[in-house]
Amino acid sequence: MGKKKNPAEKITITRETRESEIRVVLDREARGDIKGGIQTPLHFFNHMMETLAWRSCMNLKVSAKLSDYKLTHVLCEDTGIAVGEAFSEILEKIYAEGVNGAGTGAACIDEALARCMVSFEGRAQIHLMAEAAQSVEHVEDMQTADLVGFLEGFAQGSKATVHIDLLKGSNPHHVWESIFRALGEALRTAFAPCPWRAGTTPGVKGQVKLKKV
Image (tube, rainbow, N blue to C red; front, side, top):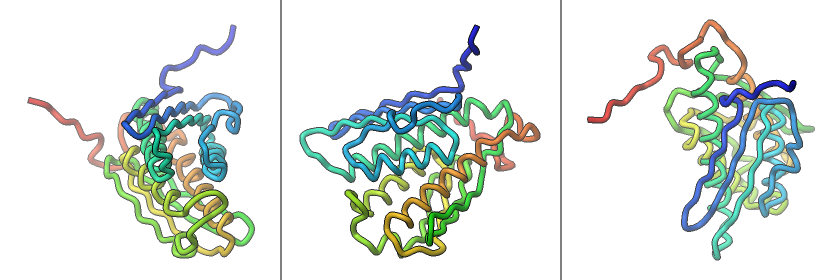
């Protein structure tokens, strides 16, 4: 008999608006066909999603449909929100097991080097210091502003604090890939087991519980 799946190991997010329909599936099971499961109209974006999945050691599937207006900014930002929500939901379901909940990562590709820190404490914000990456208008078939839009959406959807610093680099492909590699490494660390923190978040105040009257 095969291994019985834990419901916490797979999250499916479908985000629909008048402009787009984004479907994200995320799981922590044995590695599957990551590349084949990522289908958006932007080739470099697909490459970055595959990079994020590979470095975070997560299976990530992404499909995207746009309305009559083929707006790449909408595609990237909405995908970022949905991917962030998927990571957040898995994390909330496995807090009881004990995980770090926060992580750091550094990654390089050739001349480019980036560093990332992420903390899941319900405080959605991103601080991106990557002038060399943002100063170039296009990378492959994408606008760099749309890559920024994804990162902003990810922070919003995951309700995480994200700090990213591009330390060096000149090739636009390399600098952006180093950024996504570093984010993936930070997420891998955040999801690593930490029994000492079982049942709580990385912040000492723990999970915030809201009561509706």
